[in-house]
Length: 111
Length: 250
Image 1: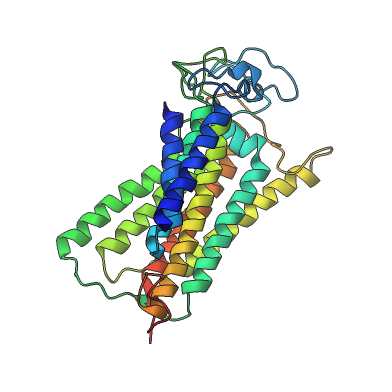
Image 2: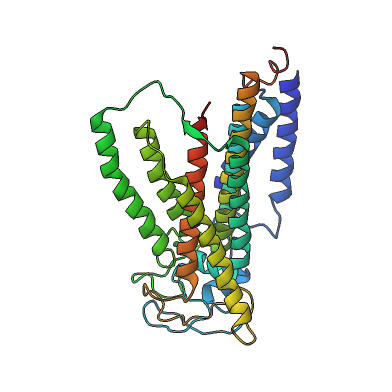
């Protein structure tokens, strides 16, 4: 079920990217797209009744049923890269606002 | 019209994804994944090169990879080179933000509201708690959920609290730049130590004793590397926050 929710989120983000004409809204759409993708990758590794892949004093051996640790590790990488791209995009949006005084793409260049 | 075309394109994409994944033998249904057939089982058993057999928390010593948190074992040990690249991407993006927004003489942006005495003092009391939580999460990255990246983000969020609650506060940004470069260089130097000083070693090899799984002082270089990553991520995101909340002094 989570996989369909993730695909719906991905579609929502793509729709926003295609239709929005406001720089901030484009960045928000990009983030929704990215979160949908991350949710999808995480859902691939889910196992029914699986526990978090961490050995503790209560769950103390490797014979237990864990969820897949590899998608979690890959999504950790993807989240950090997402933070970096979002910061860079917001800095660019800030510079656009300083130059044109607006975030709307249609109103730029008219003065 | 344009919105309708976009809607159709998105629907086609979703339809293609769902039909290609339904009834696909290589793609399991939600919750029915079989880990034992995947490469992840080697990470759980720590048996990428040799098979140590059963692992028990607090007893098993000298595993191939020591962290009790298996995600940390993948991120900071098996795939540590990948993490080095990831830290580099974050460094480049903070450099890009500094280039786009930065200048030499900067001052805080004038805010419409001016915080009162209670808000300033209360946020300073909270600051210590958030900072210590971040440091704890970064240090215990090999035992508990979390690690360098979430810990670094928490350290940066404590800085953000001070920025938001005091309209004249600025961190000493030069110190943060120094901390960031020292942490990044130490990460590479630790990697080079494994390559050059150990005979038959390779880049980022875990050259210290792995110890007993589950102890704070275990897993060799993994906690050291993760604390360095936490410091680096924290100072980088603090630098980004500083760049966004200051402007060029005229």
